[in-house]
Image (cartoon, rainbow over all chains, first blue to last red; front, top):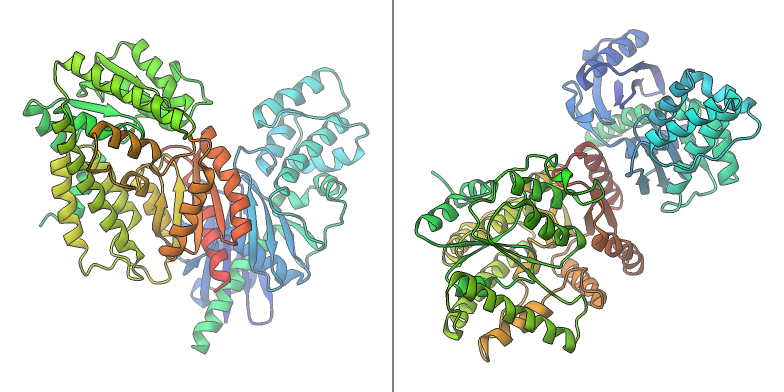
Length: 263
Length: 377
């Protein structure tokens, strides 16, 4: 039996196919114009990777902002629950997740079954998100992929005080015009983004075993900065942390199928 | 066949509903008012129709933004935008009160805009509940009576006030009976329908409202709108007046069975005493009814109300909402967090804009909260 998880976020769409033994295939693409187009394309790709057809999928669960708009999905669950289920399955010691996606960031606490015990999301603006990093990287005329390695080379970072992404961009441009070295500016950006994320931990405290998921988990500088701030090393996951939500969705579909089968 | 639920759907969606339009045709004056401290009885006793101000059928905030800053709440800006658009031209007067700085400023802006009506009155209500404060509030009501009498050349007699008290007490009693039905495990009415009902009955003559409420109560008999797995919840907040927002919550599995919102159970709290001098009885009821966070020394009573109501209505969790930049509910929801920890009930605090401009984010929070609650089943 095959189970699919389809996570349609604001910047990327992810899909995972599970069978009874584990992850069979996964796929990640940049989002298209609509949730449906993104979902269709990412599913086509993951089905091709797995060498199966859509009809072979027993159950599909969708998640992410586009979760309501996917006709081939049998159920939907929030990305908060899916990241909990997925991250806990990929490392069962995980009790806290810092999930930084394109449009929002979340701190999620889990119980020992991997179920959500509490969560908090950014609700003021885009600061502390992947989109925020992208805007600030663009101000330096570099890609988001280049930002992390550059920031790790940076020496002295300078505090970016504004919370608003637009005003943060102005501060970055001011540093640029003052000829501050690019690696130092990149370091300042990652430090500012990490601080916005840290503000959320006042509502949901960080437990001992904490992992990071979402697209920003690929940014080595933000990860390092957050580890410094929380004074802990993130625990690793056995699969790509950006896919944790899609993995959780596929697992939920598999659990649901098992429960229905038992009943 | 049109049902009473269809009827409230149509009435609540219109700024000037058909009942108000008919009342105007019959020569009735329509008086807009803000907030729960303005006694409708005084307006009714003056022979006029009380109309609770609202921002349904919004046009956005672009006109109002010329008067307000973006750090004012979107209810005030949406409502004032409608003023500037002429949506409230059917009003013969407006009574403000100093509820919060945002609506307080609307009083200044409305006057400055030159958009009628001639009668724009500010009722001063103290921010604390004390015996001195009650005296001050009483003075404010006496002044309101005098101003109405003078401006409209009417007489607000004791007999008329007593008759208005009877009518409005009946309205409150009917609303309480309707709310009581929501204690049942088989929910006869949805929160979104309750809000449509409230929007309807606060924009029509009280006699018509009472008739509508009686028909609504009859229609609940034997009705069950419970959804399988619906999560019983209480909703707290100030300005929640978009039924679509509650429908969105319901579509995600929320069964809102009780509330502490302006257009909810607070409105029907307590009767005005039938005995004694009518203006004294009105003063006592409106000054000391279940307060909103503008009353600075009544927090404990509000928290106890929420706790007791959650128990009575078997609500599993509290959803507390505030509009961005609402300072009153900003402070109150902060304290809710302490209360929920102390008494062990799950709490979700939502900050949003009027008109659900960030519906996607709201959906994720509400659905995740319900999923979290189900994890403990």
